[in-house]
Amino acid sequence: MIKVNNLTKKFGEHISLDNINCEFKKNDYIALMGANGAGKTTLIRSILGYYHPDNGGVLINGLDPIKERVKVLENISFVPQLPPPIKLSISELMQYVSVGANVDKQKIIHYANEMKLDIKTNMNKSFFKLSGGMKQKLLIAISLAKQNNIIIYDEPTANLDPKARDDFYRLLKQNEDEKVLLFVTHRLEEVEQIVNRQIYMDLGKIVSDEVIS
Image (cartoon, rainbow, N blue to C red; front, side, top):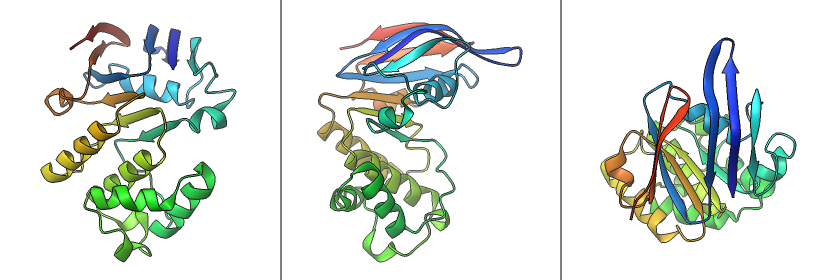
């Protein structure tokens, strides 16, 4: 599903990704770990087509995420560590996602309820003005409602309380078949019941890639 081939990305003289090679296939549930500055975020942004590589490249289901970005992003759900500064109301955001990504709004409401987010009484509230936890719950609900076969979470539980974290992982366990599920995380203990592969990065390289039972 995701093939990274000889990927190098530089920012000035700094090498953020140093000739990375890896492949993520269906039913790979990956914890991507490493210290700050290891290259994890650069790898994710390269997969999403945000960055042009200096060498090598990425293919998503055989497609180039830069040249065919719209088509590639139709098949990926991504929840960033820091929610984007969206000025739309919840209702407007749901409408935008429904039309733009062909997502059933009732599915968003369903997963929001599962995350204990009272969405119906907050429909007219600006996403921007929601608490960090509410923003994260809504973005998670949207990511699950899209029902994509590639889901990427960058520190998804950073703004969630322990109960919401439990709800999040329960929903993932219910929806993990036939997917690539990629976590950027510093909390291996949280995801170790879900992941079957652990990748460690350091100084722009993959230093360990371990399949676990």
